[in-house]
Amino acid sequence: MNLLVVEDERITREGLLECLDWSQVGITKVFNAEDGETGLRMAKRVLPDIVLTDIRMPRMDGITMATRIREILPECRIIFLSAYSEIDYYKAAIDLKAIRYLDKPIEAEQLQTVISIAVAECMQLRSYKSTSNLHNMQERQRFADAICTGEHADALESEYTRLKLGADFSVKDYCTAMIISIRQDFEDEDHNDLHFLATSLSKSVIYPNLFTIRSKNRIVLLLFASSEISRHHMNVTCKNLHDLLSDHVYVIAVGNPFKGLANAHKAYTSAKTVLHKAYLYPWGQVVHHSEDAEKAVPISAYAKEKSEISRNISEGNEKESYDACDVLYKALATKRDLTHYKARELYFELISEVFHKADSSHLQIKDDEMGEAISWIVLIESYNLDELHSFLCRHISLYFKSLEEAKNEKKQVLAIKAYIAKNFMDATLSIGDISGYLHMSASHVCTTFKRETGDTINNYLTEYRLSKAKQYLQETLLTVTEISIKVGYRDNSYFGKIFRKHFGMTPNEYRNW
Image (cartoon, rainbow, N blue to C red; front, side):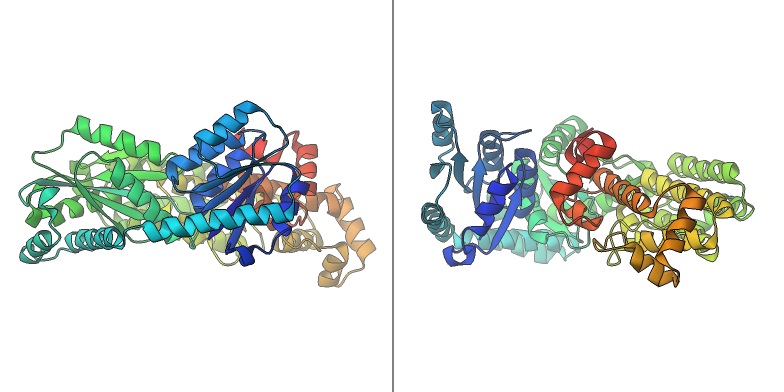
């Protein structure tokens, strides 16, 4: 059973987390957030059974956050904490059917009692859930899977009859398939989260439908109607989906409709064809089937553009390299004849070539944003065309920039920077570690670095860590606490102070800026 603690005062939050042996009261996982907005995002990710929250918080108060959480988790138990005994708060708590409203300071015994009550209520609610309904939903998903895999028409009609789907739609209805591809930056995305999202999307559609999850990040909705769904009504449907997908990076591929359950697989195949070209469009778009979706050429069709990029990089022509990249980008966007898989392979070859040249010159240009477990190859798997183009150009820029810097820096300085780039995540990293690695005295390391760069190693390390922090804030959904640890700061509060001192705003303010 999951518990989410939301409290903006760090000392109070840590006290709540440590005051009980949570396993003794039936809590298996405890999560925490420092404000309402962060708490709402985390609730969507971890799906808490119980929320213990302060009321007065910056950015989003506890009442607003709890109301939003209840919209997606109606059975979640809410416990409010506050030092303010104002009648409006009590009224809001009553409206939300919060199980308790506790005044601060909270006693451990009192908190244990309230949590135990909440756990008991959650267990009771779980027992009330209908096993038959859950089984029916799983059966419907298996039926949707059978459609997607191209099960024989006779077998489909037999399952249709057995599941008594006639009350929902007819075997003669038109079927339109929609594939919602969710951008996932991490390999360990929770499948349960995607299943919860798929269920919510299915319920929001006014047409009878089936849903299933294909691959690790694709939700398939099969919509049924007695006649073809018009483009207008399909756009209205997608608008409803958009509202539920507001916290996700996604694209929706809509295939052509096909009449009859026997042809439903063709609708899914049509949507898959559209999805292969959806990478050409910005995220958040709805892409319908068109003649462009049927076009397909091999990678060799872009051999000339690829060769021009490679030649200019090899010859050290920076501007010409960017120009050649733009030619490839515009050709792909205009012709729309290369599938996502082939486009990714094309860019993979070009990016690999840039990295190989950098490695050959002992230049560090690879991003270490995901650690050793996830490489850049995994990062670009779900990139669209704009992101592939940007990733390639950014690393070409880094390559030429590093190449120029290398001409003016000594080998020792490059080695120091490379060591920092590789180990900046280590909170205990010191000049002694660097000097030991280079087999140089600490004083010589400091003097050499200062003379060649005009900066101290400690200041450079701080700037490097903060630059990585900015990158994580811009490009990932990691929490500030997770980012703090990833860039070598064990104390989240200290990290926040350093960040604010350098950039004049907190990490969260920078992310939302």
